[in-house]
Length: 184
Image (cartoon, rainbow, N blue to C red):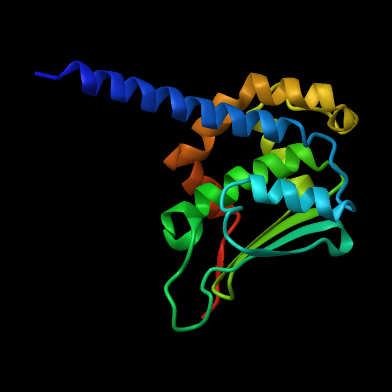
């Protein structure tokens, strides 16, 4: 028999988890219309995304958001942080791509590196086309600069975005088309 203490504990855990996810989504909504030239704001946005707790370097040359996550502190050490579980890599890359595409409208592309071992890159226009096929209400290029429109889009679609990046079939199809490069 399940005790009342266990039921109360599970309810509290569920409420805290829901509050954390909603807090993160609300915080991300506030980055709508971020300009890629604003390195400080882009850096804060990347820190708010999945794996942002892992140390990283950021390069915005040619308006490409290039994030270099420190995957291993040195060659002989174990991987650290969010990226230490490679099962997180595709979901993390996809989640971060979706939000960067929505929130930084003047980026030309995105590059994610996990140390020198894994690399992924995609052009913004390719990612926009991908998202337009998924979301019937995906903002137009002009609407991307309207912070209220972006906030509304994220509010309306945040649950679906999470479902999308958790969908193993979609992840497989996406990364079959757009490959993660493994460096040897």
